[in-house]
Length: 311
View 1 (cartoon, helix red, strand yellow):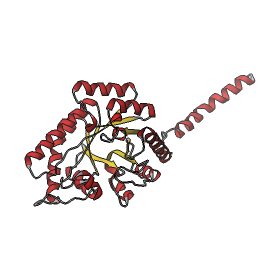
View 2 (tube, helix red, strand yellow):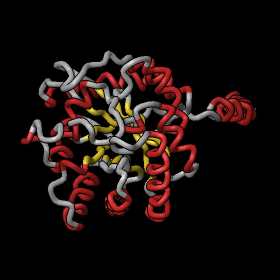
View 3 (cartoon, rainbow, N blue to C red):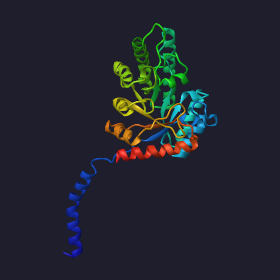
View 4 (cartoon, rainbow, N blue to C red):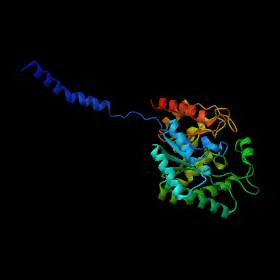
């Protein structure tokens, strides 16, 4: 037998063992960092930057800056006709961007039953709009009592008294009943509602969990905002992390519009990885710096933190 043939046969005999080792080594897929998207709030900031408020402009900027997806903000959408929604979906698709979140507003802290019903109907319409856009999760709120203006509410760190003659305890029932009435539409449309830790009865993790656990449905989870807990944020974020459908990550370059938090995103990324959160991180830039410079800096911080947490 020639040396060449002997070498070939010896190599061939060793191949099965080599391949078996390779398969064992490759049995665990590599960890994938969370995808990073941007809320279009980051550009327009509810009209503060009017030239950047148009969704089409925001989608173009998100693609240019290297994001993976976009979270739409309903209040910045001047036209919600079916044709316009499909143009938005087409534009995002051609840019290779996911439409991965939809931020809406509603208010269930209303003593008048007809007002709560109006907000239920509004939320159902918003869920159907999310379905039309192909968006898998929609941010919902409890709403506020409306006893303060928004600026005053921010000055009071989201704490406000109930309307005269009513209590927060009473209002929990209103919110639970209202969101419960939206579940059938959420399931039909395949759009997960995410209750945000955002003022009203959602100001504390205990308040958010009380509502989510009472409804106990896969179609109501949590939209977890990193910037809405002022004291001891990490323990509070960890309480909500197991229920998160979407994470909104705030940054404040140039100083915050209402307040500034020093958030440790390396720690937050590790916390979310610990609880097996694999979904999107949606940047919400809420600072005074020009978004055209601050948003790319924010993206770099989030990319680094979540890549390290996945390593």
